[in-house]
Amino acid sequence: MAAVEAPPPDPDGVSTWPELTEKLRELHVWSGRPKYAVLSAHSNLAPSAISGVIGKNPLTRPPEATTLRFVEACLTYGKAPTKELHRWSAVWTRLSQQPESAQPVGAPPPRLRPRWHLPALAGAAAVAGAVIVAFAPALLTGAGTPAAMPTGGEAPAACSPDPERIEDLRRSLIWDGVFRCGNTPEISVYEHPRVGAIVGLLVTGDNWFVCWTRGERHQGGNDVWYYTQGDHSAAKKELEAWGFVPAVNLDTTTDPDPGVDRKCSFT
Image 1 (cartoon, rainbow, N blue to C red):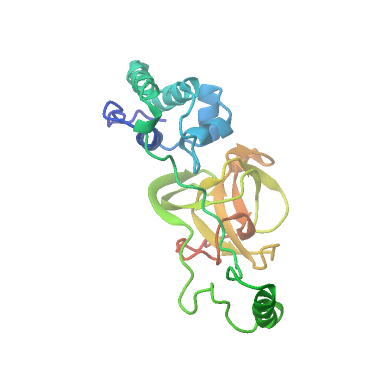
Image 2: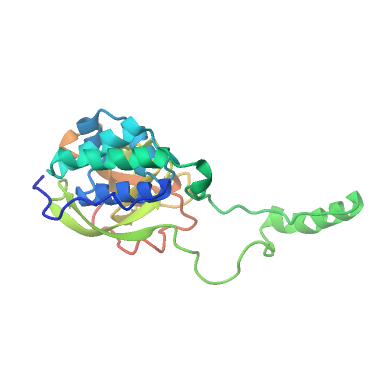
């Protein structure tokens, strides 16, 4: 990778652990947003450890050694002087010396798929039974609309746009912007939008995808697949781990997700 022209992010103003997490994410973006597998090769950190630093659900207080190895890997990948490392070390040490009461609540809880819930019922058992019976026809037949479910309109987007430009060596092009989505960790990436040759593996639960297409029907009850690059290559290494993931493995409530507004022109 060519050297990054802009200087790396300055951590000196960081005063809380959540701010350090955001600054580490900025450093990752500054270095070109390398895949976890690439950073792992530069740092000897497991991809799961890197996810604990900048992933969807990061550690509230990442270990010092892990943090500094991550920083060093990003600086090396971005071809910046590793002498910057001492500034990050100083920030980590300063935060570790603060009393816990000075630290705000850490990262928000992980995003969960919406669930249908019967209303909480109080009172006599007979009243509770009557309400459950009233709901039973709708739950068993699909008729009616449960009170907890919104009516009308489009489901909210689970994925969000990201302006990062990504080089796709499989298709010999550059994607101008991607879409960040939550997903089940440790999932296979297939060569085509159907079960077949596994060309890669997505290790973490927060990844980018570039487009969606239709293919083989899967356990999610639809035929939507999303195109991305795995963290690790499997078969057909010449494809550089680029391939398709079934929608059932993404944290979406409708597919294609409204936040992913680019349809793949290929399969």
